[in-house]
Image (tube, one colour):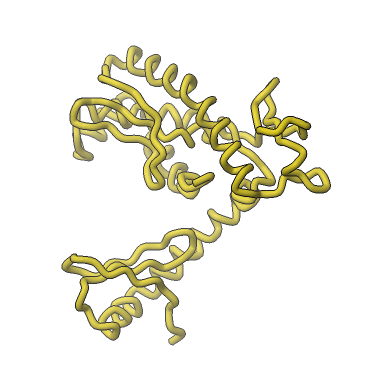
Length: 229
């Protein structure tokens, strides 16, 4: 059997666990677990690991041009870009203005400066759009919240704390509006049910009947949570 390549992370924990991140195998193990025990565990999970790794790499490949800054997303669609002599990216007339200094042969070239600029533009655009949708949906379904702010989380699209303050990941602006609405309904439901119990999902389903489909799509585009990090 071919050995499985993995990254080992040791921590104060009781059990060995494996996850697939960006097409790579990550193993979390207790501080003193011997390597042979870890690799026995991986061999037992070999089929699952192979399947999940293939799915993860396929998702990355789907957004390869986006991560390379050769294509841009906005509200679930490819965002057209226009080359500009300006020094910083901006949005104008439904297009992303990309400075000429980051473009070669008509194609944007990824750089730390371009990533910072695009990130800044998206965050600026996300705040009013996400806040307006949150307010509208909150009033429509009768689930109030106590505050709103943008999040830069790398693993989740939104959160609701114990005081019913909601954070929405600014990268939601990349996704289709229907998925944005689902995330908002999900977090608003947490103002009543601070858990993922059956009662919570029943409340989500009451206000967003096709939530299972939305959950599947969010898994497909989950890699975008790390875009422009």
